Image (cartoon, rainbow, N blue to C red):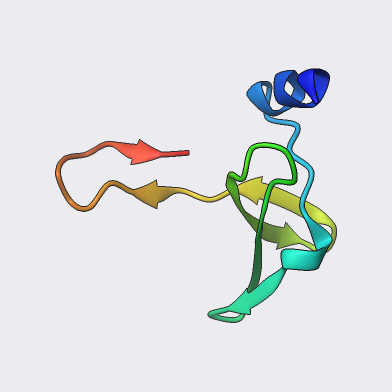
Length: 62
């Protein structure tokens, strides 16, 4: 589990295939190791979603 967390820190997330759902015409899921929200950009190509921080500023959580 430790090496997987380090891989997530460098942006190498692995999607949890059992939790993939369709939302707004896209497939979304979470990382298997760190639970970061992911979206499918292209078939079999996942990227971390930008999640806004409740409108409190220009910040965004990746």
